[in-house]
Image (cartoon, rainbow, N blue to C red; front, side, top):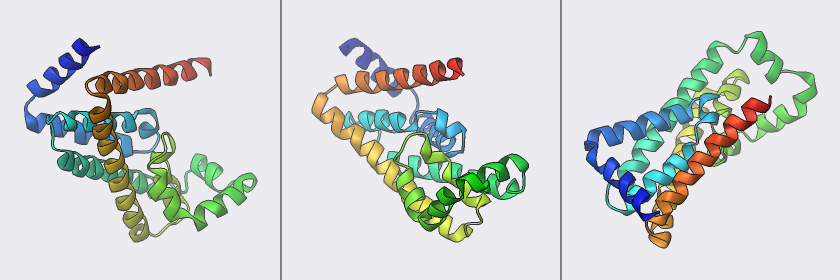
Length: 194
């Protein structure tokens, strides 16, 4: 276990710093986009980055800023896609179907809670942007909610990984990588059953 943790840390440290931050930005950007972001285990990636920050490989504050910015921009792309395709039959069927109207009324009334705290929930975190745009949420409101949610999510992930590493030591990196692998395998397994 110690060898795996040391290998990953050495590999991450051998990459130039700007590439480290670039990779963090790209993964968080992809994680913020609808549908694609539901597949990517972004929370686990943020925990891993937080784990690296505990060992001094990366600044936790920089990591929070980069992850929040990447997630926010991915979320905004999702919102713009939702606005562009809000009249598409497949989206209208999901968003305006009478069968689900009660759920959508709750979504409309509690949009701030859904967007801000929904970022903390796997799978859910990237979908509100698409639906909010299709439901006609004002972009200024959505930008504010998304910015707050992105910072909250990045802070929770990075500092959660940081604290986990301080408590468990180098075993935390292996645990977090195990979570990444298990979540990836579960996704593949679920897709193959359908």
